Image (cartoon, rainbow, N blue to C red; front, side, top):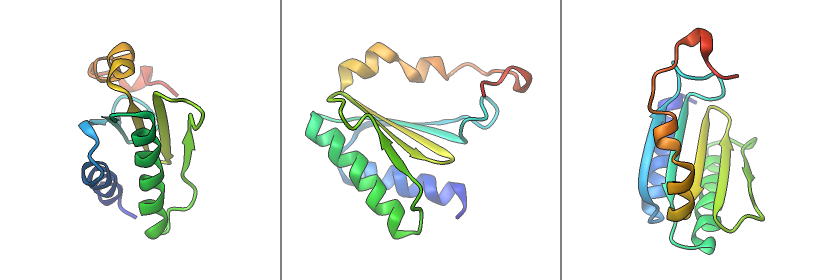
Length: 115
C-alpha cells in the first residue's frame, strides 16, 4: 500500500474518532525510523485506548496485520507502530511535557539522522 494512502486512513480514523490536535510530521529527511509521525491527543485514558484500537482495526481491514500498540498499560500515552508511520496518542498534559512536535520540527542532516 502506498504510504500516503496509509497516512490518510490513519488521519481520517483519528478525526472520525474525535482525536484532538492531529499533527503529522514528515520524517523522511530526519530519521530512518519511519516516514511519518502522527501525534494526537485524547480526552481520557479510555479515549486513548479506543483511538489506538480503532487505528489497528482500520489497518487490518486493508491487510496491514503487523501493526501493534505500545503502552497498553499506560493511562496517558499510546503508540501505534504502523511500520512506516508512528502514531503517538497522548493526554494533553503529557503531550505538552514531551513536546514531540518541537523536538522533530528542526531539520536534521541525513548523515546525522537517528536510527
